[in-house]
Image (cartoon, rainbow, N blue to C red; front, top):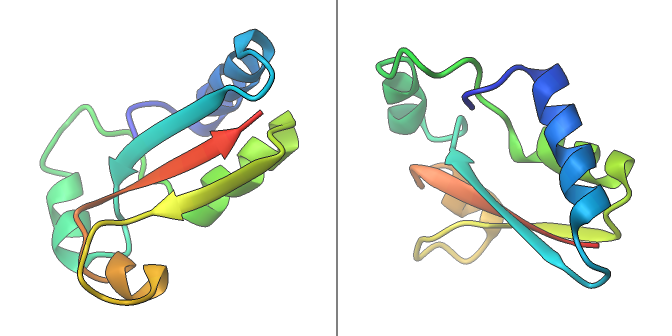
Length: 95
C-alpha cells in the first residue's frame, strides 16, 4: 500500500528471483473491502493506493509463483465474508 503498482511488480519479481524453491512469501496489507479499514486507509499520508487481494494474487501468478491464497482473521466461515470486516488480510504464496 506504500508503493505504486510498477514498484510492486518490480519487488515481487525480485522476491521471486531470490526466493528459494518451495520458499514462502507472506504479505499483509490493509483490507479495502472492509469499509472501516478503507475509510482509515487515507489517514496515513504514506499510503499510495490500496491493493485488493485479487490483484496481488494475479501479480504473484504473473511473476511465477505457483500457488497463493488469502488469509483473513475472523469468525465468519468464508474468506469472502471475513473480508467484509477484517482490517487487514494476508496473501501467502509459494514458489
